[in-house]
Length: 462
Image 1 (cartoon, helix red, strand yellow):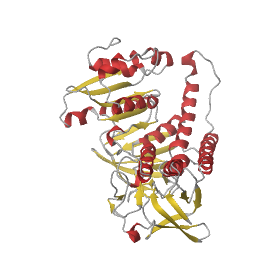
Image 2 (image 1 turned 30 degrees about the horizontal axis):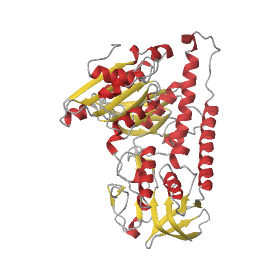
Image 3 (image 1 turned 90 degrees about the vertical axis):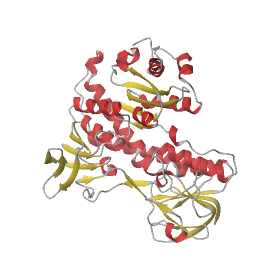
């Protein structure tokens, strides 16, 4: 069977690439061995947000009196929370199945492997292998939980994000190793439901890719809520021989042992590039990533790669845009390379974190003369009325041209605000234009305008 495009992997890179290709009139197939939608829809972005929503509702109920409401004592039904999360994931996966059918995309079930001559071999669950030919083959095989030599996952006592989403019983205590988005979100979720959580980060700040002020604010918030947060600390070993886990950590003062029921390893992801035929086809790999050009073409004609297996941030929305750019280029449309300096990042803890562009330190290190504006939500009418006064919005501008270099947010629903900044930066909007644009009141979004005004010495409410 001959296709114009075969995509291996149906995550947010793969299925989006396939649908866009079908919209452009190409004959398309998607190879997927597991659930449609990949890790994001089934074991990542979507089900974790369902868990976090349950935690948020639980917290609201615990603080109902703050809003003048008397409610019975709330109790978290852990199995029901897990079940709801899985139902949400299943619903979204079925949605992808519908979209593939709607766009007449063939779903090839099984493990995909590329072979010379633009061939994809698909091996089904019974071991039967079938070969398919395509003019263009896109690799979108994604990534999995990374394992460290001293933190081997056994799926029971030392777990990854998959197991963390489907535990049958809520643990009484947990050590979370790694404070990136995955680690911090699970730390918040389990702590909110009553698990005694210790969050460990080897670097000086949690959520280390964020602006330092944002990182410090989240750390204070976690500690204020009763979570134990250790930074600049490395995990040396984990003893699982007993009933629970004994985690040996190295601090500035020496070694200490932390006991917990379970350890969650959230130290990053590893690319799924093994066993997919890269060696046989001669596709170049460097440092665990497939090498591509700006339009995701590999060194072998007719083969492409997108998403977590290529350089760039391992984010669902990045993979989706890479997929669109890739297939539009294949279809002969005029496209521009993706601007990786304007990629938003979001962490769905409480408070939430959202950012785009340079941090204050990065801008200074790059030699910019900058203006920095910061507006705390304590000065926001909407935030105060909502009982969500924690956090701030911080913006950074270049003095010379007024270029919007970066924005960093921490607070209620800031993940919904960052897209406006991304759009403004895409349009090369200046600070003056933001100040002059009328923002609705009272909203959380007007804090963006207030932060910009503060950078230019014109903030009214500070």
